Length: 460
Image 1 (cartoon, rainbow, N blue to C red):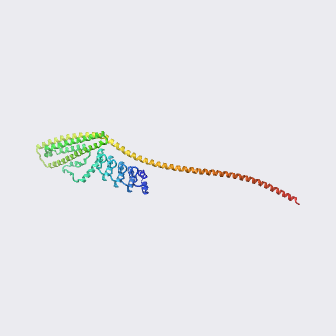
Image 2 (image 1 turned 90 degrees about the vertical axis):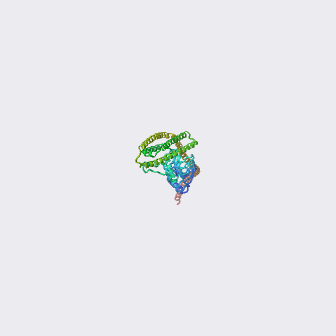
Image 3 (image 1 turned 180 degrees about the vertical axis):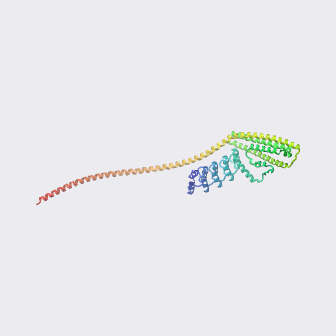
């Protein structure tokens, strides 16, 4: 790992800028795993370094050895600010890594709604499939990521609304304010059957039928009753069949986690999804039919007088409808309780295993990343140690040379000292001889003077 990568991983913006200005490192330099400094800054969450690198015109969509971009790494490690900076600088959100996962797949898996919303706002592909043939939406359904699934559904509805304007018409009953409660029924288009909401809708429908039972009897025939009863029973039976399909798939997927069977189970999920969509379309048609009935009922409210025989017939029809509604309510309530009671336990083991496996993969990736950094650091320290050893050897050789030279100088100094001592001894001997000679000279001088005195005395 280069010095630029290290500076980016610790968030040292000044050092990164200095190395780029002095051209000691290139903004797109890669390590052994083909990672750029932008990858490191996004993994460790340093938005200042990310901003600096993108302003220096780095390759914002550079791939590492696993084909992951810096945006994918930012989403994997929950670095939302870094991901936002990359998206604002035109990073491609639809690049897939070696497993076929895009940044949106990872945002869905970790249920990071805010990052997913930003990816969608920058035109992330909601239909991209990974190697397991899963789109972000199907992954959200598989992992039970309800919040992100709703976000993807709303995005898909917005796209359909732009592609097909006026495809659906919202009919309101001008006389019945309660119709508005069901006006946003399209928002209930969830990837799995919601029996609680279905039961609530049926219950509200029963109350409305009880409220307007008298007027409806004027425009209702036995054939209509049979059709309505048949549709309700078919819907309940279809819901039960779909729930059984999903239950059997969940149980089999827990028992068989192999990759080949997982694809089959995913196909079963898609089949169940199609059945669920068909059921919900049928429910929508029933709701529209109820709206039409309400319009007919409101048009009949102008009638003031009704024969007693028709009133009795209407009362009987109302009682029959109440009885059937109560029967449907009880069946739906039992189905809801059974569904809510069994659903969590069927997926707990699968979800726990999947999350543990993915968390293990994530930790393994991070461990490999840290081990790579440690290996690079160890290699650099080894190089520094080798250089230090070479420097030590050269210093040791130089020390030996200086020691030999010093020993030679010491021996020469000792020789000079011995010669000096000898010269001193010779000087002392010469001085002693000189003193002896001086004493002799002095003695001779004294004798000479005494002789001269005697001679002077002897002369007349």
